[in-house]
Amino acid sequence: MTEVTRNSTEERVAPVRNAQLTIDPTFTIGAADRRLFGSFVEHMGRCVYGGVYEPGHPNADARGFRRDVLELTRELGVSVVRYPGGNFVSGYRWEDGVGPVGDRPRRLDLAWKTIETNAFGLDEFMTWAAEAGVEPMMAVNLGTRGVQEACDLLEYANHPGGTQLSDLRRKHGAEDPYGVRLWCLGNELDGPWQVGHKTADEYGRLAAETARAMKMIDPSISLVACGSSNRGMPTFASWEATVLEHTYEHVDYISAHTYYDPSDGDRASILASAVDMDNFIREVVATADHVAAKQRHRRKLKISFDEWNVWYQSRLQADLDRRGWVEAPALIEDDYNAVDAVVVGDLLITLLRHADRVGVACQAQLANVIAPIRTRNGGPAWRQSIFHPFALTARHARGTVLRTEPVGPTYETKRYGEVPVLDTVAVHDEETGGLAVFAVNRGDADLALQLDLRGLPRLSFETHTTLAAGADPAATNTEAEPDRVTPREVTTPTLDGGRCSVALPACSWNLLRFAPQP
Ligand code: AHR
Image 1 (spheres, helix red, strand yellow):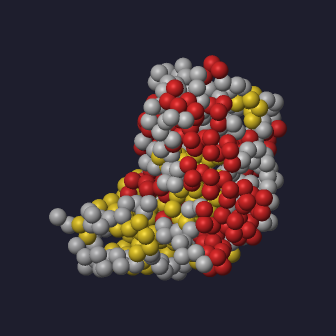
Image 2 (image 1 turned 120 degrees about the vertical axis):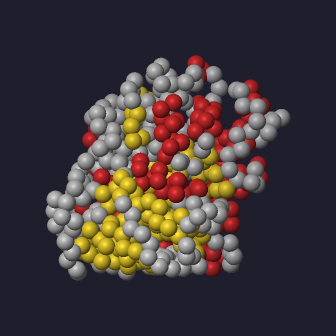
Image 3 (image 1 turned 90 degrees about the horizontal axis):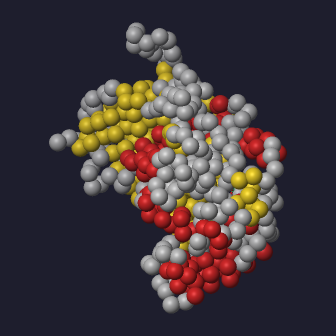
């Protein structure tokens, strides 16, 4: 490790470590699919009620959609939004959420011990999604329901007309079919907490039958079979193998879910969460490819990473125990700090790095519930720290993802052993000639990154945006101080013969943008 003294105007003198990164445009992984920048709206806590939807709010439109949340959703750059759950969907009757609102039933939601009013449902979600400019991704209930109800929902949503259910949609005001392309076959049915929890064989058979029938109604849809709820499940990998033996030929994706919990305060480990996500993806790919080999499929299955985030999970039980059956209680409204933002930025790097096999990814969730967007009922909406790396990655990761092999120091973690300090990915936009490099310094010292871009001649260094948690790792954005954690632009060095040295601050997420010289 080389010790370097920092600029004399800065307060502290920190050791600086060195790392190298060479970028070559021929080392391609795949297209940076827009669907990697998805989000998730579940009927849980205040994600829907008080989040995207709050009739009577001073900022709500005539339909009850919060305009401030719509604007932030667009700014976040979300592409796909999964709906309506999550655990919620496993006990949900979709018919409750269509037609005249006054006729809709109030029901017990067993997943979150909540009263569901059904004031917001499929029809509202589709209108909201169109307004937000996002692609809807629907989940069907394979917990308490089965093939028929999934087919009914698909017929209501996607069939043009001339049948009872498609005409019902038209009667409810949607003349044209909703044309939903992405469908999840249930949610986390490997989990004992799930209403309608199943064995892999039970779920695999049901998912295959449902998939076959749904594709008879609309062959253009893409289907997601449920993978494990997380990599730590005792049935992980054998669940995927069994489910795919039943479903491989009928589905397009296998799902993956993961949440990283910083509650124990082990900062070194939480900063290495992307190492775990990386291994998780490789293992699901290996399992899917094993089934493909066994069953002689040439088509490679992709992963729909349709729930991922940082989540202080230790707080969930307390939230649930604290109350009886109520409407839209505040649930898992985590306040994210600057370190969490670095972790989220790094998880996005991992998803991009697997762009060849991860086709969809949804950060969970969009508003209030472990979310980048926070609101107060009747009050304002603001950006949490984790909003920023997501928005910037969604905006600038355009084109082809390039494989990078950074060389640099490592450090020791309790959860994952020895891990690299530096994590990177690059995205090359062939249309504009621009290049975006995403880099996370997980370490507690600054990194001097020697960049070699000789494979991309005639680029100039445009901007270096950094979100650094080193100085104030616990800082959060609040209603009173909504911009305490934000990225800042720092001075960029000049590329000299395609090379330069960039300073990556301790514990930081960075976006380095290069543009072709005029
Ligand atoms: O996103 C919160 C919950 O986490 C979802 O409902 C469930 O699918 C997962 O366990």
